[in-house]
Image (cartoon, rainbow, N blue to C red; front, side):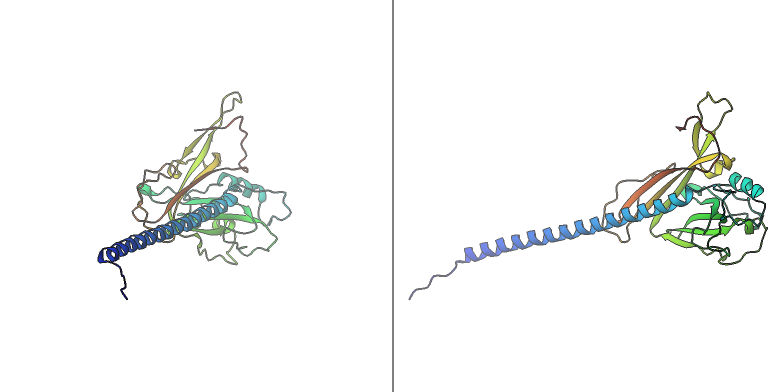
Length: 280
């Protein structure tokens, strides 16, 4: 009985078609993997950015807060004098406290990260510590935000200890807590009001850096900017540069995914009467 088989041409054609199909399937799988990896990185960066912005907003919004009538306020000191001091140093500058002269809001040199230091009355510092006070008591706290090893960190201080009015107790070791990893840039500018006695004139807000801030009691807004990268590189060709707030354009040097976040926070506890705000 005569049997028919495949010819050499048919075999070669089948192998070629199979190879093309295999390559196509592999390319689709690789493309899908890359897309999924990018989407996961994007979702993670977006979530981290929103978390950091909300965390900073919640604290900065209370800058300058001092309610002398609050029943929770710890009243061991002259509250009237303390309220004036705190509200005039709501945004803390270096040399404000003799016990820690370097503590203060600073502009980073040559594009380096900034440092933000604010004061307010609260039940805890930015780390959640009561610093020796009862859990239901409010006290004047100073919170510092800065970048170290690509981490956004904070640490808190008792304003009364910084002023030399009492001895530190509780968790006053000033260890910094990490708020967020993979932060490439942290920058801050301050909205200073140009207040005039003539209420018929427009009152404007001019944004300045910390090194140009001479009257911190006139700060009515704080604008913050963050540049955050993904946890792992995802082989992205970063051709887009990022200019965070007033800083120069920076082109990322790695293949991580980068996202920029900015927000402006109006300080509700700064006691200035403004007829109208004009953002400069």
